[in-house]
Length: 232
Image (cartoon, rainbow, N blue to C red; front, side, top):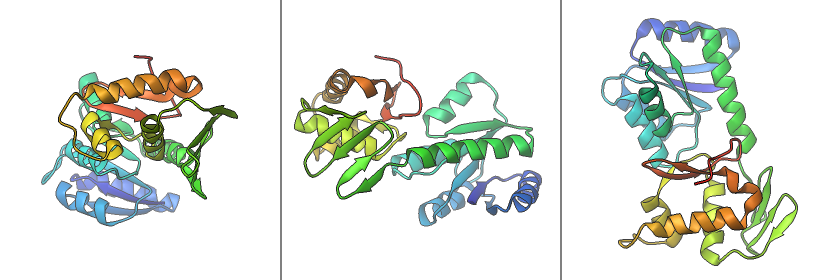
């Protein structure tokens, strides 16, 4: 694996670097948040380890910008903040997991393996215009949706487009504005509840996977077929 570590504490970096060497992991270490963010955009990484407090750009901002730009990479946040509200903020901004300082290298390695396994398992496979995951198959050419072997025939064109877009970007959180622009194809200046209505209809029509449409409070929606969502 090739992992980017954005951490300004050199002692922490040295500890992680030694453990990576034992595990055969290629680690790249930077001490500045903005420099690290630029490396994320211009490189290919199996995972990111990002400290919360950084010079140049803080870890929460890095997570938010990575998800806004729809970059698919596992992110583990290192933080000395152990309050529930801080942890929720980090996760809502795009972190997949967090490790509270001080931490054991074994704990960090276990978290790395867990998040990379989840990403590898849910990366949608597209072949001949067909997007396929564990639960469903979507044919972009024929606009057919098959869920657990059952054909779904009552989707409107926009419901299909919304489902395909979310399934194509698993676990990424999109605001209503982003979905309107990406799925509807233009910036929408009217009622953003259009997205809410379509999500509600999708949940009803695609019942067997409706549990995987997640509402992210204060942000928007994501599709994640590894965990169940509250039905809202």
